Length: 307
Image (cartoon, rainbow, N blue to C red; front, side, top):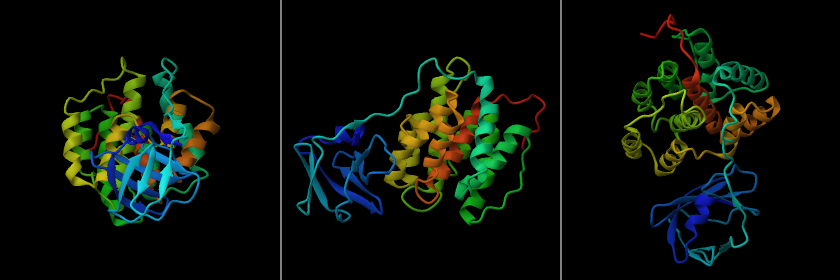
């Protein structure tokens, strides 16, 4: 099985190289700059993902590949045949089937209360409860003591972003978001994952309530382009995909289930799958998405604002 974007990369004669290899995935980059990755069955799907029913072949970073007859022929001589692969399509938001925007806060609080009762957040997941407190009470300067330095450094920024979301101040959101780009370690730094969730939420809300929420930001393309030199290529491509509404399957399903008021069990099931991604990647995506949902909240005129 493969995503539509990955299928589009399998053009006859196209060449590329292995960009990175981790435990459950190998990232391939074509000479044209298109990113796709190989993963084993059970890993979350994405439009750039190609799932293999067998273990990943042994791959060396910077080794080359060529596409022949819908197959990836590796430098080692191994050929991965995708001619009979099924193309996976992203779940789309049903048009006209979203909940009333006024119901969203109560549904969101109920989902988080039930989900967090059975989960122990890690990484940026520690931000979820204080962000919900901000959304309920409109109070800021919430004390938080994360377990690592990078998460501690990110909290004041996340707190300000939550406030800007409640105020629908997109320019303020993007100004604060700059501080999180590339913040963290690994192929997808936690700051990038958080922003990916945040801006995927922005995308879903813009599609769901175009006449109720003004979520247009004229400098969006320039802002995204400016992120590229501040993080690695893999994380940048994923961040850009989230901006455009292309998320990992469990995040996509969680967001759509939430906005269409599907049964609580289905919403929580998607969230549970999401937080299993990486050590803390899924939690960062979820935390960012929940902060992004604050864009749909209505701030009370007498709410205390953060200095």
